[in-house]
Length: 63
Image (cartoon, rainbow, N blue to C red):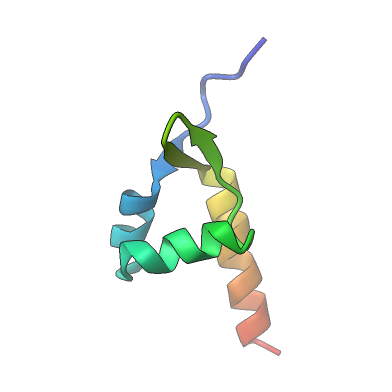
């Protein structure tokens, strides 16, 4: 059974949250730095995957 409680963001929503361009997030998705799922012609990013990315960049900045 699929868990429908997961929240998903579009690339546009993530770009607004991080205050960066759409293309920046699109590039991170293409480089597999942010896990995204393609639905039709659009990408969706699971909230937990987005949080994992934020932790990764936070930890890399603390080194």
